[in-house]
Structures are given as C-alpha cells and as structure tokens.
Amino acid sequence: MSHRTEEIPQNEEEQNEQEREAQDPAAGRPDGPAKPSSEQPRPARSWAEVRHLLVRLHFYAGVLVAPFLLVAALTGLAYTLTPQLDRLVYGDQLRVERVGDEVRPLAEQIAAARAAYPEGTLASVITPPGPEDTTRVVLAVPELGENQRTVFVDPYTAEVRGELTTWFGSTPLTTWLDDLHRNLHLGETGRLYSEVAASWLWVAVAGGLVLWLGRARGLRARSARGVLLPDHKAKGVRRTRSWHAATGVWLALGLLFLSATGLTWSNYGGERFGRLLDAANGNAPALNTALPGADAPAEDHSEHAGHGGFGGATADADPADFDTALAAARGAGLGGIVEVTPPADAASAWVVAQTDNTWPVHYDRVAVDTTSGEITSRTRWADHPALNKLSKLGVQGHMGVLFGVANQIVLALIALGLTAVIVWGYRMWWQRRPTRGDRPAPVGRAPERGAWRRIPLPALVLGIPAVAALGWALPVLGVTLAGFLVVDAVVGAVRRRRTA
Image 1 (cartoon, rainbow, N blue to C red):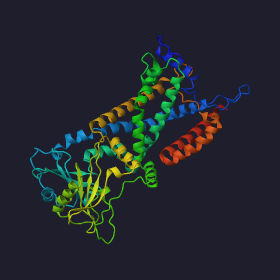
Image 2 (spheres, one colour; image 1 turned 45 degrees about the vertical axis):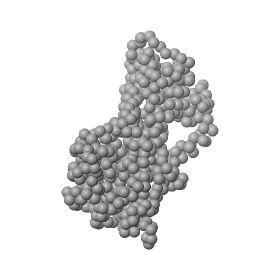
Image 3 (cartoon, rainbow, N blue to C red; image 1 turned 180 degrees about the vertical axis):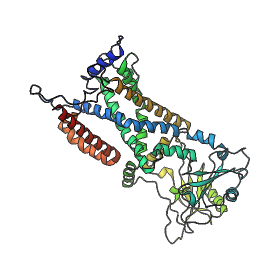
Image 4 (cartoon, rainbow, N blue to C red; image 1 turned 90 degrees about the vertical axis):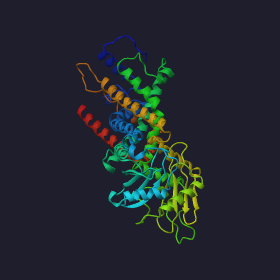
C-alpha cells in the first residue's frame, strides 16, 4: 500500500481508505462472512487468519474495554498527584513550623499525643521521613473500624500539630483518590472495573504491537521512523491510526508494567498470584516475634504493623519502651523511616520495621526484647525471594513512590498518553464509517468474524488450551472473553438467519 499525499476531499478519502482496508489484512474485512457460493470454494486454512483474528480481538478490546481503561487512566493520573496534594491540604499536620536542634524522646511525644487524644489504644509510632516532617502516633479507635486516628507531633517541641483519620497510613484525600482508582467508591463490586482494565490492557497492547509491526513489515516505504513516529503526510483515518499506533509503541512497556503490577493485587487475579507465591516459596520471610523462653511461638505481626493495632491489647504499652525498641533497632542498623509496634501480648517482642519506599528501598525488620534491649530476630530485605522483591517493587512503582517525582512524571505521561490513544481509537472507528448515500452508518464496521475457523489446526490445538489456562490465571479476563464469544456467536446466528 502506498501513501497518497495529494489533496482528497475528507469523506471521499475516508471512503477510499475503507475500501482499501477491505483488502488489507492489517485492517480486517467488513463484518459478517460473505454468502456461500457454489462457484467460490471455502477459504483454506492459513496462518494469515491469525492476524485477522488479532484484528477483531484488538478492535473489540478497544471498543468495549476502552471505557474501563479511560477511567483507570484518569483516576490513576489524579492519584499520581497525591504527595503534592497532601502537602498542600495537610501541610499543618505533616510539617513542622521550624526545624529544631534536638529531637524529643518518643515517650514525650507519645504523652503529648495521648493527652490530646486519649481515646483508643496506641497502635504504633512512625518516625518522621525528613527533618521538616512530624512524628506520627497511630491510635486504634474501635469506632473507626479499619481506619485509624493518626496524631501528628512536632518532634522538636512535642507539640501536637493535629490529627487525621487514616487508612494504612494514607491521608483522607489519598484514601479517597485510591478508592476512586481501585473501585470507584463501589466497594468490592467496583473492583471488577479496575480488574477488567488491568486484565485487558496487556491484551490490547500486545495485539496492537503485533498488528502495527506486522503492518510495517508489509509496507516497503515503512521504516523505523514510520513505526515510532506518526505520519504527518497521511490524511483521514490513516493519520489518526499513525498517531494511535506510534504513541502506543512508545507507551507499550509502561502499559504492560501497569497491567502486570495492577493484577498482582487485584481481587481474582491477585488471588491466583498469591497461590503462585505460595507454590514458589516467594513470600516475604516471617519475623519470629516470640520472646526467648515463651511457651508458644508468637504470630508475626510485622507485616501488619501500623494497622489494626496489636492483637487484643486494651491498654497502652509503656511509652518509654518505644524509645528502647527504637534505640535497639538503630543500633542494629535500621536507618530512615521506621515504624515501632508494641507486642500483641507478654510473650511477644516489639517490632521495628523500615518503611522507606523510595529507591533504594529499606524493608529490614527486627524483633526487640525491651526488657533487655536485645534483638531477638531479624529479617533483611536482601533475603527476600526474588519474586517477592519484584512484586513489592512493582507495587511501589505502580503507586508512583519508588523513584519519587520522576516516578510520578512517568506515570502521568503514561496516563495522558493512554487517554490520547483511546480517543484516537474511537476517532478511527468513527472515521471508518461508510459515508456514501446508499450505505451510511454512524460508525465503522467491525472486522470480519469467523477467522478462527480458517486458522491452521496446529494453532488451534496449541491456542485453545493456552487461552483456557490464561482464563484460569486471570479469571476476569476469562469470563469477559467467554461472554464476548457467546454474544458474538448469538449475533452472528441472528444475522445469518436474516440473510438466509
């Protein structure tokens, strides 16, 4: 196919483009197979039909799943701004008025927080991320349910700067935007939207890459520049397609990363991933919190530190023990931000865990016997299994905190780029509509159905089990794909009856 550069009226050019695409394997054929004829033999099986099947899959993924992807992109874009928004909205609580010369003991800061907010029990204390930040005294208050009350204390003056209702350490604004991105504030039911988006995103990206790169190989005039950059000389639907595809190529790695990391903590796909971690011994090493000589091994609460309190404790631990546990952890080499969590019972040790999510991350944990000031157990980030490390780092990168502002900028550009790709995709659908008076239509026709019947048998024998396995690993993808096939089969049967 050659690129025409002469001026053509818009509607005529779009019509010519559509007619050429009817013969172009990269664009698919009009919806609905041709009527059988005794003069035309049934098409033989061909590997080219694999491409036709990808065209149809990519088309329907774009039309039907793109709304979910668009919502995920826009809500994700808003979430990337949360560090700056938190500083703007909650600056009084998060920052100190003046950096002092000496930090007060944790016991003194805790006493000030408890004097101002005596309700609930003391769950944990989080040290300031930087010299201008406040200490966070986290309280478990039964009336708040899964949420907590976090009291912000000036570490230099022990002055209480305020309090916020937090969720896993997140401010109300961050929590609201997080829920918007994950479930549209619709609870567990709403999580299906984000899992549909994550499950189909990689399918749309991979299919688009195969189609675009395969199309480039079929065009002699196409070069690497033509693959990576839009064609400014093209007109109509070809110009839109070049922007859609070239932008998709640049975004591909980022989109595949977001799809994979989003699935690791999705509702159904995440459960399958958890099974994989268990089978591969890929979970984080457990911290033994049992004190020496304890009658029974204590449960490891370190992974849940700072959320939900410390077991069934109904009274605060001695504030002085927070300083003892912190001093022991610092002596053991735990620097940066740490969270100090009291024990669940008298037979358990205190837990001090690093919570530095910015690269290079620090996630070491120690169990401390505050009566002696000794470290009784330790887990190191270096000892985590590779699969666990990849999962943990992937989540932090997905949330935009792993590389700080640079991470936020990259995620924002990906979100904006995905939004543009989706808009261009719908524009192509509209541009490919028939415009002649004898066959007008509001949108372009779908690629031809039935390509799978003409795929070589080896591809079917290998492909069907592979798709079934993929549907098991990603249940939402499997169910939605099965639903599409059923609806598509019903629509095809109805159309055949009408044309019979």
